[in-house]
Amino acid sequence: MSDSDSSTPLNRQALHELVHAFYADVRRDPSLGPVFDAAIGAHWDTHLERMVEFWSTMMLDTRGFAGNVYGTHMKLEGVEPAHFERWMTLWYRHTAHGFKAMDRQRLRETAGMIGRSLFFGFFSASARFIADEQGRVRIERG
Image (tube, rainbow, N blue to C red):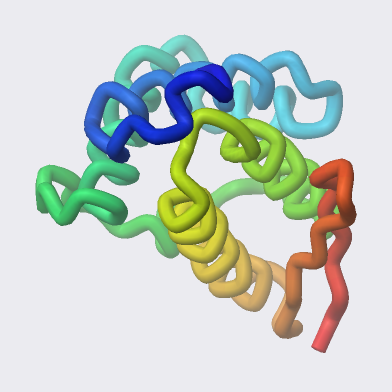
């Protein structure tokens, strides 16, 4: 998405583009890629469509997603705090343009809420995600 369509309302197509671009970077990321590939394997197309449904449910209230997000993630092996920083950094960068400010804030707040829950599940510690001006996110443990 470009800056030119920043006034476009948030819709399923915008979420589809966001999810696909974001996870393309996740897959290429030297830290995140191996964790996701180990869990998803050859099923990326299915995962991407589930993520579009998930974000559509979260942001558009479509209610098309059904699943246990927390339980599924708790089965992952090798997850470290740095993975959360990297995931959130990529998310912040991908939501930086192409969305109205209100939609961008909701996308980031929703990701942060989910991230805090998962972080607590993995590490039994609360976390705040703090982004700098370049969109790099660090964790501040509470």
